[in-house]
Length: 354
Ligand SMILES: Nc1ncnc2c1ncn2[C@@H]1O[C@H](COP(=O)(O)OP(=O)(O)OP(=O)(O)O)[C@@H](O)[C@H]1O
Ligand SMILES: [Mg+2]
Image (cartoon, rainbow, N blue to C red; front, side, top):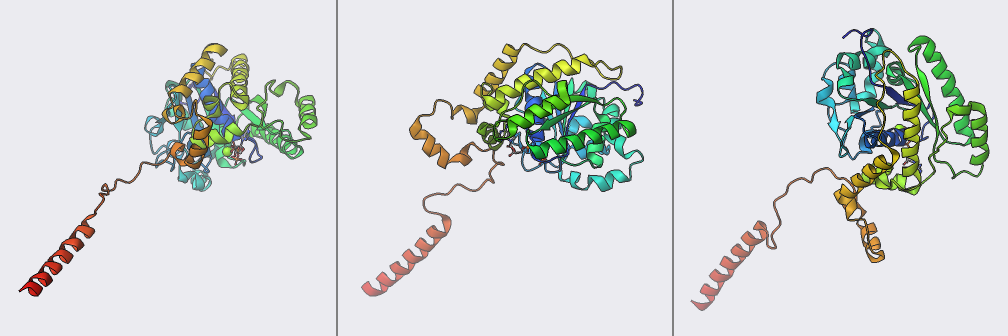
């Protein structure tokens, strides 16, 4: 299909030039919340670190993924990996993303490779919405994400350094609009990890004053459950849908949907009306209740807490164990040694008696 005629689902790139501002956490949680709101979602992990892929418990990184689709080596449907959450699939990162800059440099229109791949692979038949987790730099891969995207969402921490990073990122997006994607919208600035910096309140106020409505009304508070969720390989919105960061992500996700539905574009499929807040919340709670490893954690007594903390690995998604022959109490080598010893003792006894 030609690029001019192609119709895309809304593609949202989650980007900020600055590292560690919760891009990956935001991408994974928004993807899960969008699925809970009833959409078919593809979460594309374009960061060679593979954190979005790992945050769904997919480790080590699979052999086939985003880079194979971008370069046209593998069809999209063969690269997509289903998740435990109905409606949400992952286009995983692979180690090839580490050399993507070099590989894409040979591509005639190196910034358009992802958009062309999504068009030729009919991404719209796989997803109502695509979320892209970008690396923390504006190289060729992020350039591809922003050239394919209808909108970019900027997570930002309300601290003085992040504020400076946000201003730089804002200018880079403006520049990219002139070169690669004139119709790229900003899907807003989402404040993350709020409440853990004493100056955070002041910085937040000045960000809201400077960027106005671009800043989401709901922010994501700093919450230890986020780290716990990452270790368990589930989004915090599923692990703790009623808690601080978990609840914040569903509210922010609904805000994102409202913003996307407001900006109609001829080459972007409109988003259908989402499920209600209550229904989406119940879906997230239901997913949590169905996760077998997590179920064991529910209703745990204080005595069990200490035991389970010591055995944390039992709840961490692990690669399948190597199959080993089951150990019996008395292995083969020991049995053979006992037989030889027995025979030697028997012979010695015969000689002694004879
Ligand atoms: N709301 C939160 N509360 C507490 N910790 C958080 C929260 N959000 C993210 N974190 C933690 O902050 C760290 C950075 O988050 P994340 O990996 O999502 O950032 P990033 O912007 O994707 O980083 P990078 O630039 O390296 O890709 C992670 O350890 C994550 O678990
Ligand atoms: Mg990241």
